[in-house]
Image (tube, rainbow, N blue to C red; front, top):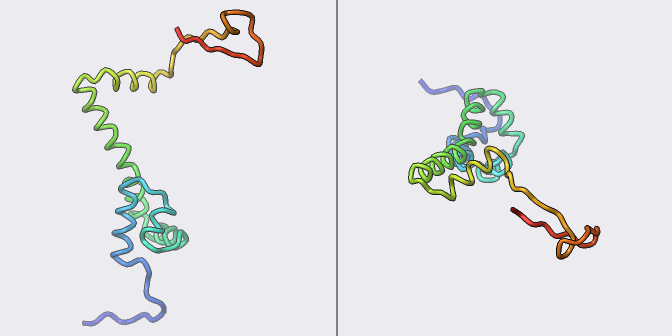
Length: 120
């Protein structure tokens, strides 16, 4: 039995448009970037997400893929005992704890026009 045509304009949210959106979100694209890739407007995307909450959830999941991939790469570098990566992870986790001494030229009194930063 054939589907009855409801009339009106055909949807722009075709399987191809959804595939392109997912492809863009998978690499961390913004909503606008994904819409450009799929050749749809942001309002079309938002309306589709509103009417399809499961797609909206999938969109957010896909957007996190690059971050998760980066975490696996960093973890692999740590497993390989990469010292530089280990330092970067600790610095980002704890914040840079570098002691800085601010003095004038040759250790003289500080004048606002000349600042020398010495890291210890």
